[in-house]
Amino acid sequence: MMKARFWGTRGSIATPGPSTVRYGGNTSCVELRAGTHIIVFDAGTGIRELGNQLMKEFPSQPLTIHVFISHTHWDHIQGFPFFLPAYEPQNTIHLYGPPGRDKSLDKILKIQMDSDYFPVELGAMSPNIHIHEMREDVTIDDLTVRHFYLNHPALCLAYRVSDGHANVVYATDNEPYQGTLFRQSQNPSTASDFPTYLDEKFIDFLSHADLLIGEAQYTTEEYKEKRGWGHSPLESVVRFAVQANVKKFALFHHDPMHDDDFVDGMVQEAKQLTGLYNGTTECVGAREGLEIVVP
Figure (spheres, rainbow, N blue to C red):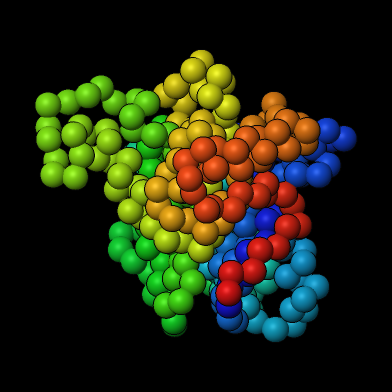
């Protein structure tokens, strides 16, 4: 059994306030418990509360925590300096993610905590922090973590965690290639044009996932003005989930301009689109505190 819990569901910038109480205002962070393993997707501002909870749950027990960072834009790493378990010397923290275009992942995380930006340096945290740039699959006992490169204005990864029975995919900050690449003369065997081929590779990565945590940042109308920004319209993510036979899709990475009522409307639209595509995918809105058990 795996269980996902949402600690931060917002994209781009934290949005605390009365209009975001139900879905939450913290930026991206999802905890996945898989047996005794603690997996964390992204280190947005939501990771602070996760760290506080882990300190209460395990006051003296040494922990090993695996943090998989999708990419190093602010809203996905800005909470890590406030992650208290990373300051405890008995804990071991493994950080995985892609490099920057001209900087290593290690350097980017150190720069974030440079004295010009933050009063505590990365080196002042636990000596057992290990930073890994994703090059191949990661095996953690009975778990396998695969990765897939997404279409975003930074190197950005999706992750698929499997225990041999259940599969959870975390895939945020991705734009359909059909929206950003011109049609080309190539004719891959699986598609009539190259952008379609790339989108189909993404659908293959999602195939038969028990849970997809995927972004739903824009409506179709909003996307028309924000093409090329590296995010998806809701319609495309639902379509991909249905084509991939995903069992449950948690709408995630809510736009900072979308209040709770607006997100409610997007969840309802996702359900309608699923029916329109003759799919069986269950659509839910990711909100802080929501737990989803994946049997």
